[in-house]
Length: 188
Image (cartoon, rainbow, N blue to C red; front, side, top):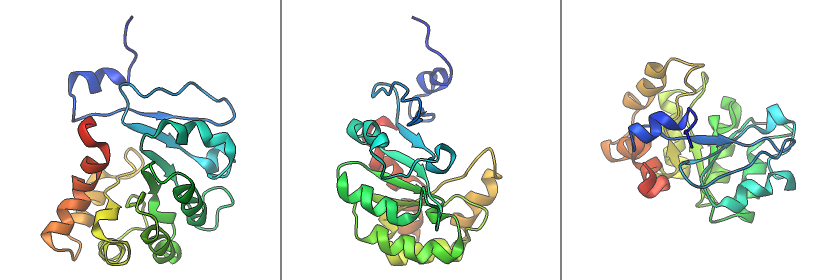
């Protein structure tokens, strides 16, 4: 059986490229555990709250889940991430954009601090190096992950925010990739 793109680059370059499958709760597409790093969901696009039972097939896999997060959204507010993290403590849950808006970053970090499986992901045009350092202070550097939002944002800018953030080298190394490598285990 021929392997479909996007898994071909991942197969040719294991550890450098990974596949995140997308799940739509309205179509209930088939999910797999083999050959993927995790699941990506976008509650705002799907207009389905993150803590809705229609996402249960995602949590049942036990794979890392990256979900769009947006403060004050009825679908993906950080409080919904805390609910899901409490219900599924064995599932690493990555809060995309750390809630998206700067006025919600600190609240997202406080919520994440209470759930060891909830991680803050740094992509977004509103994120700054100072905020990344503050997130590490509030939630712990071991709970903050580099994210690029590539192809929407320039990868160099997102990476530069972490490279130039007022962080110690050990914390920077965790955020730049150490945390994700730990979450993915042997997959990356």
